[in-house]
Image (cartoon, rainbow, N blue to C red; front, side, top):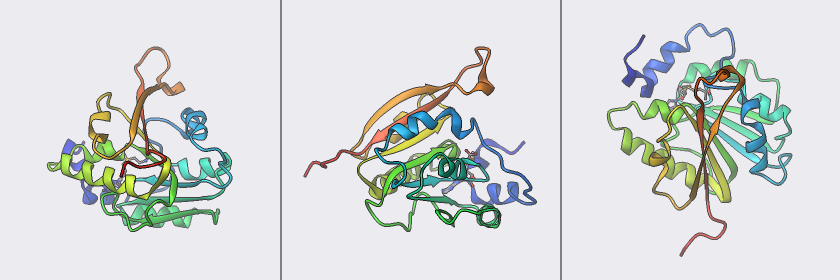
Length: 200
Ligand SMILES: C[S@@+](CC[C@H](N)C(=O)[O-])C[C@H]1O[C@@H](n2cnc3c(N)ncnc32)[C@H](O)[C@@H]1O
């Protein structure tokens, strides 16, 4: 098992994604959070979604199948997992791009929803974690449309502390997927909603 700090490093993930064969979802499948994520937008069929640190998870395609037909952009810092996802991408509304969440090469105010599952948790292991999480928050806030929402799914009940800074309102709830049945705890979901009319 790699040391914890490795989870924040591109090299760790690139090595982990060598010889990929299957999809894999950390924590839970999209179905466990689908009703909440769908409730964040009025019209999923036109919503633009950004998934940060998508890895080889099924989330992008499961969201598209669930009615998010505007466009889904899914990024990851590991080039090889993005190549793998592009090789297995039959859906032209889903786009996989190599990119660092702390430096998004994406237009401001262009997404209705941004989703993270496990990426902030990985970055939180970095030596300069606070600075990196702050940069990621700032970038996510920038690319969100007014009234857009950042949905951060985490193993941590204190990840909300890392989201403070940008102008948005944070709500916290628990996610209890079937895989955590029998009273074995829960994951955490933070919904950070950007105001419709930012303060001037
Ligand atoms: C714990 S995995 C979660 C993968 C996927 N979201 C899931 O739920 O299965 C964390 C992912 O974040 C990616 N990652 C780590 N740091 C990143 C960064 N700075 N920018 C973009 N992706 C990053 C890793 O390559 C890895 O795929």
